[in-house]
Length: 580
Image 1 (cartoon, rainbow, N blue to C red):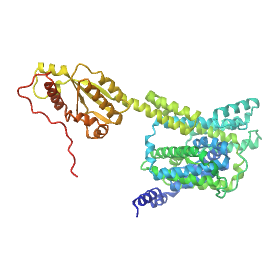
Image 2 (cartoon, one colour):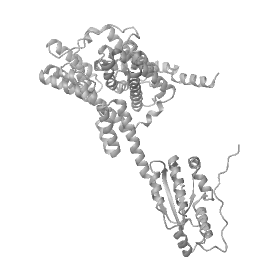
Image 3 (tube, rainbow, N blue to C red):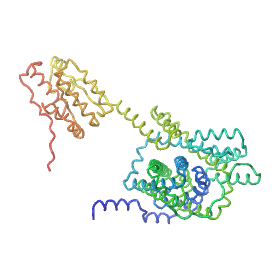
């Protein structure tokens, strides 16, 4: 068979479910079933709230929790992950719904699913480790702010103003509330949020979200509170899969949002899986398989009227704390929510939107880890700047741009720090002088020879500084570059080194190099810098040999007296070719 086909088949097998998953599910089913039911109780109000926030309604959130939750549990790369609608994803979806409607969401979900599966087959999951912690923390802080601002209209009991940007929409909602205050809605939302936040501190294992929502719903019904709208009628069952809303004509316009959804699903899911691993002993997720599972989930959920999904850190954490040990817990969570869709739709439809707004307000508050933010802010100024910039970009722009900006700024600051560590130091000759030399001979050598030691990377961010320093060398006839401590050389560094050698040679100053490592030779060879040094035998293995070569150069130029008994001339450094 074609090797390419064999490789593709091997990659596909690596991301598909294995028998070991079934064996693990049968090990402790009772504990997994109880954990799954606990997660379902926590996930129900969140699924309803995120469905409403997305603009497609509470039923879209429930469908997503059922379909995506089950498929991601089966095909995902973590035994403990729980997937469904999340606040971060609704932030991306709101402008898509406003501009393209349900058809745009279906199209974006399908395209994002394909992209995630492609990333899994390309084994891109391992690159998650390169996302800096300040970018993740800033991203999370920005999402929390956006989720909180999205709840302002429902929390105030006013109609949701038109618009895509959360800040102006929230401001217009405040203005509408000021014109016609609805204090019962405010009381319900703040009451639910307060119960959840206080309960989480008092009894973290108790699902206070469902307790608060039930209490708010009963209060609104018994006291006939004017708490704005309720969820409304829900379909009693899952809709049949359909492509009726697929918007093929908008594929080009929806490509960028699809990339945003796929990037967000990958980032949040892999981050959640890493958090789950850290909360347990012996659990390790497969990042590529996790991307594959999220891709399958995002292909299927929109077909049933759902929204794109991702793994949820909050629900995954509840799953782990409840004692889950296998995928059976996440599957149980999806089954319980499906039972709610079929059996309790009329009861769910009476929940006030203000109560769900309170759930999401509390969720946004709990997303912010004050300790982690304080630690990042105190670490370095660069970390603090990246965190603040990423959070602000998340709030003002969108999530993908925020992550890109955060990564670019973090990378630029890291390069600046690395470049600052690179040094060019002038060093004395006496410790490296070969043989015995009198003080008079040493003074003559020091008068005509200068040695520089390069420490750290010789790359584009630091190379031009070296060029300026070396170009100012004067009143000597030989420059020795000690390169044994150079950690890396890129093309820019090699070109700058070649430029320095040529400029000094034109001024009558010979340049010798010592200690060039094998790993640095390719870059130096590719731009001709190594050939320039070798042309007159000016590359040496060690600094003493280079000093001896410099002395011979000065003797030949008549600047030093010839020795009566010269030492054997060291051979210029040569690299032996390995036998073929």
